[in-house]
Length: 294
Image (cartoon, rainbow, N blue to C red; front, side, top):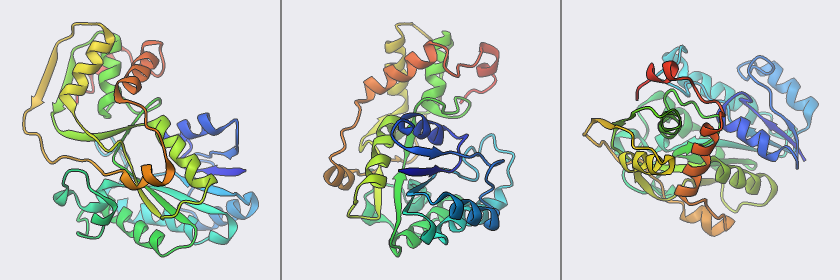
């Protein structure tokens, strides 16, 4: 099975390519190899590749705290990348992309948002609106699927601004743990994402859109304590902002019922990521991580 993974240098794309590499003929180009904003290059690449499936991982403005990209281009560029692929539907079997809980409208988040909550509100921010438009198109399409993400963590994630990798890296280095805000969030281990992707691209999902999440909200402060316990170290733990903010979580009942996917328990996933950082995987040095408090 020939598989194109866009955004090949990103965290999710790297995990997919690594874990699916043994069973698929994978092409995972970065932006320098395939500029998704160039409609002509995309069309030629797809026509030549004749891929059975395209997994669209590329995102514009994926790291807003650190990004040097133009925030005014988020809507335009996300949609251009998506539609430069989607419009060539005759050149591949199916297209899977990753939506976001931002599709529901950040001002209207509520606990355990289900698929049916989509379109109750139109997102006011560019990123959420771009994902909203993609989902509207996917629902009307024949071969486009959306796995809607909330929080994902795993190897190759960016410890500079992503909560769980930052805490794991700090614990591995024996540094104080810093929690920016004790909000409740839904976090999914990336290996579970890989299994869900494999199900979508290899099977016959009865729906076009699924929430891909753990189905459970976790307090960030509690997760930091769990990681500290896993490390076996007694580290200072600081909470910077006690205002929790809105819970960000999804209902995964439809996905679990249709796919029979078994999710990794949170403590097991945390142990795996901490062990990876502890063994040197992408671990920053002390000076680097102290420059990026959450």
